[in-house]
Image: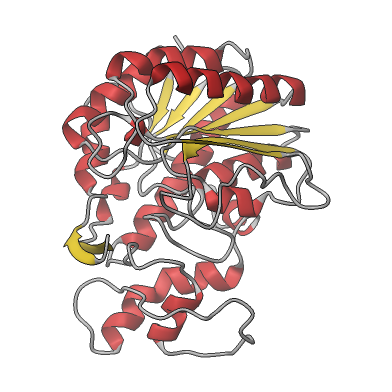
Length: 334
């Protein structure tokens, strides 16, 4: 399988996050991508596709903000990473504000996703990694995009959940622009891909099927419930399969079968997999119970769809096990 990675993705190095009510060391570190890259010989470099594919998913205002957010933070006399701490209530009137504190709140939804000095470059090249891997998929076959930071929590105009640019959505949109009539996104990260769901909520040409922790108990809480099935135009093109904490491979595969059946019925030209290894039993911030040996089984069931498939890296924070878990998942496509 072709695998793509750009070392500039390591430039994002956040130092702390607000987690469970207190400040902790940030778990989304450069060591995650380095651990995966060490398991994958022959990585291809990313090719720059420019801003146009990003603008097909994200607003120009948001991209402009993200590119300068850390500079604005430093210009305001702040040290360290830029972190939001105030957000507008839903329904609050729109305002034009230029102070960095207000902008961070406007373009984010949590306090766990700091903007560091290298965040924009890393996120930009993570998106280019997904687009480069998509080129290989559209030429025939499957490919893996080692994207970092992850992307599926990022919406059209907001960051959150350690995510800044939605790599899977950018790739799916680019596939549509290049002639794919239908695209299916299968999200198998522990957490719901709320940003991806929001982006394609009204789009009947993109199926979003997600297996994830029950949002009544787990982040991101406000998205991912089973009754969320898409907007008016995209009704039925969103499938959420929330699962309880402690889910092991048996019930996980049963839910996956539902997702795979929906994808098969949708008959996409391309499948994009948002793969998170935070479903691993040893993950420090998640609570499923999949083992390393389970990942080839999960992957093989998706591969059995027989569609050209792009795998985009999302979460997974048990760093020592991350490389073997990713390699195990990719082996299911061989």
